[in-house]
Amino acid sequence: MASFRQRGSKWQARIKRDGFPDQVKSFEAKAEAERWARSVESDMDRGSYVSYTEAQRTTLADLIQRYMAEVLPSMKGAPEDSIRLRAICRRPICKNSIAALTPAKIAAYRDLRLTEVAPGTVVRELAFLSSIINHGRREWGIHANNPVALVRKPTQPKGRERVLTLAERERLLVELKPTGRRNVWMLSVVVLALETGMRRSELLALRWGDINLDRRTATLHMTKNGESRVVPLSTSAVQTLTTMPRSICGAVFPITACALAANFDKAVERAKLPDLHFHDLRHTAITLMATKLPNLIELAAVSGHKSLKMLQRYYHPDVGDLARKLG
Image 1 (cartoon, helix red, strand yellow):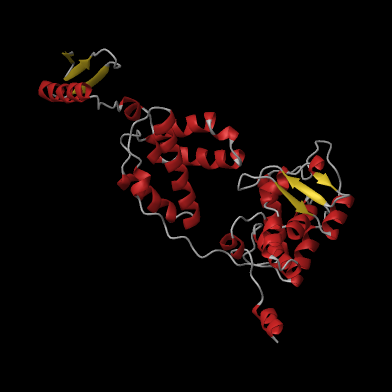
Image 2 (image 1 turned 135 degrees about the vertical axis):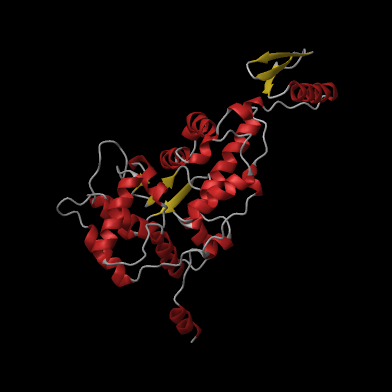
């Protein structure tokens, strides 16, 4: 049953019905309140009523913060992802309620971010927002459409094909030697990356209990694709692990992702290596491994790729070498 009362300059409609939470909304005119009440009661009678109250009083910032508190801690990459999400929360778009979000507002956010960061970063942010909104719809009873799904995603650039030459590799390793105030773990982590093709997150998650120097293996309990993997260690990798210092905390590389990135960028600058990212070490490693492991199944077992298509993105052969093989 709907009731109406005037509060100041507005009319408040309240609907009480068994089996439904009370619905309250204010309007400029009584006629508008009555139309809204008739519509809601009609939907309740048909059993098709959906309450948008939570979506109207929950801002995007509220939703992101709840996601960070309840969902993110159990996910891989939580420390890095929390930094990104806190930055998004400071954006003006996050002051909108979930019900007030529209494709036009998401598109405006996308266009603004494209003037500040690379398209790949914008695609990841939109994917984050879409995932968070969908989680709120499925798990928290926040009934609203997902406007991100209707927005065109930026075109991403072609995948990177940067591979270190032997001379570039030597220059980089020289600049990573632990002299002066340089980080003592950087040389070892880069050598392991080049020898094993492990991702940065996999290297930083390694603990000495995961290393078996007798069998020359490193066990990765959780990888990007959600499965464990055992990585064979080359002679150079074993030598590096044998001679490097050990931390009492048990981590093979007791360094944060941010510290690793900062130290790596400084070494790249000192070595004068243009356009080199840490992930390019994985491209370099897999390209070199392909010359030693021509069997694609063996190569994929080491790299952790589940499909040939993904493996191809990391294999960048020298055309001259291919020509010499042809004879």
